[in-house]
Image (cartoon, rainbow, N blue to C red; front, top):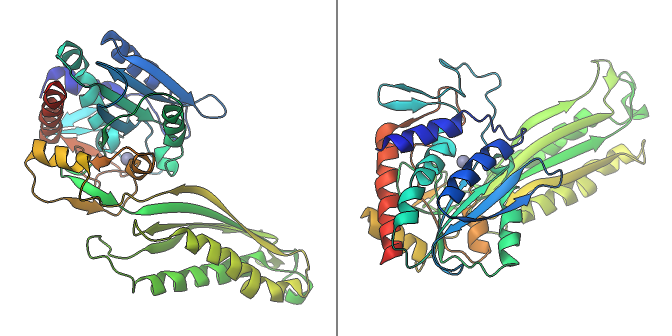
Length: 382
Ligand SMILES: [Zn+2]
């Protein structure tokens, strides 16, 4: 692998782009690299203006061409036990360690390092870069980028999403949603439960309901996925102030990850109905304004396997891979597909290493990614 690629990946890792932070310093840096290569750049911002997506094009015209896509944000390192500074990239035993090395600054860094080569290549179709924010919060950034593109003449032929697949070709992923459910009751002495409405007990009933939904969904199987069914999990819960006080508030944050061609939003709708019809009436007998309010905090579609996808065909041709895999985690590929841009997922590193302490990408993976992207550039010249 070229030294430039390794240096660029390291440079990106040193920006602390944990999703709660601004990503603008990294975006400025990437935009400067892209403009050095003659790229035409556009940004789309979040509402507060502290985060941006960057879309850039090198080569002839705006229509057609290949998108290299990655998210710039990373998950927090809070509470994780790292052997080295997560934002100081370090090479040990043929691996590059640091937050985001696998997910997914390895891919973005390698792609950006090829800008001089792309700029010098006799391109017959453009190469685009799409860098997003807030992917780790449920793909909340990239919709602004896709809306911005829809308002222009830019119509890429396909996109490669460089999430860590070990450079395997992945043509489908599950959908997903993050839901925050707030239970509102009324405080009171815990010796007299009927004089209040205990929000923690409501939350407990709600979670028990979700567990049942998850069990029922295990019967609907697509063996292409692991696990082969839609999953439902409550992952965070908070509420209550003291052991002898009926809780006024409780909040359950939960998620579902659905098989891509199912109507998973049904899970959200039915959970709202269940709360209203089955849980609340008994609390409202004593506290009429008891309520359970659910809010979709994130919601992204699955990537549906398309046997005719030009993105999958190109990636297979370049890599020589015979099989097309699936992943259970979400990516931005489903949103690109829904926006009319056929997409495939292929990137260096393993999802096993993502989101953990001592995240790393093997240097051999970065090298394979570089070779893959060089072939893709060659295809844009053909
Ligand atoms: Zn990722």
